[in-house]
Image 1 (cartoon, rainbow, N blue to C red):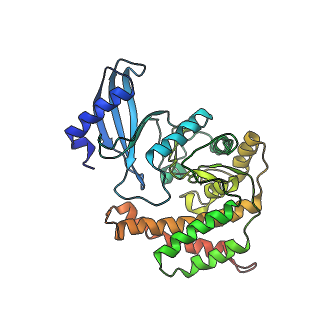
Image 2: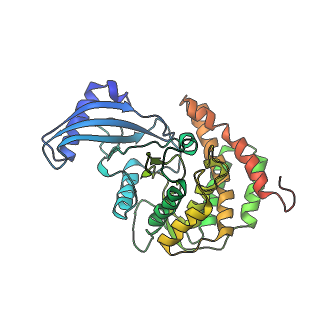
Image 3: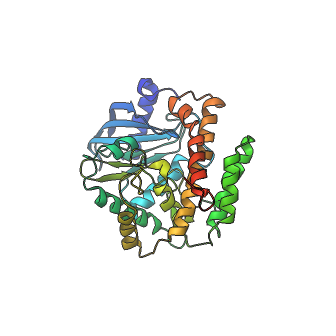
Length: 346
């Protein structure tokens, strides 16, 4: 896709389509800038002037569309938009969904538009800059409550026809999916093979299935000086065990500069669990959480290998993808630490 900011034809088509979608007399694009981050998708800050209709006035939004290459398990923008809309209705703190367009003739790809929120999502900044987020234990508890609201959506309360059927054994299904990706790469990774064996031997019993965000972590939510402003990036969401999301949020790989703060590098496990259990009424199992933390590092190693292939094989030459391709070695070191036989961990 031609860079939107410099393609007058695409901007005109976008203006006209947004006017139709917003039931406005006209929509003028005042400004448009590509946002940093977003290794899987492109995000654009868009400033609009809307004439007529319910959205009349200045509208600050984010346009989200596909990157040149992606990863196999990512949902489409239209599918992600449906999940974002469901989360909005469930009371989760997400950007307000505004428009979804699947007609690729507008800008060359399908896209969705959401209201822009204030704050930063940069993991290193969030974990280092304590002037952000307000009281950190209160923020951590809030994150637990937000996750619990996501998990309030179940196969009994919600239906998404684009998601696979809910698994009877989430741990088994998730492991099989990651192993299939690893097998397709056909390259030796002995530590990952060791980890697969550990995950097979320690797999928990099947548990209740809920809607999992699948990427609920520091780096995928925004905070300002006062606290949480939005939970982002719903492209991996699907049915799973609630402990998968809990383990992912607590994994060392997503703590950034706050390695001594187990809950996302921002606070304590106790604060997160207090928020989660108070909101959900469900007691979290620490053994299951540990299993899913191990799985989190395994999964991130596989995804990082895929991201590296986007750089090396797919030709998407961005620094972020190139550096991500080096992450598997870090994950392997953490996996060896976490799965070492009793008395042999360092």
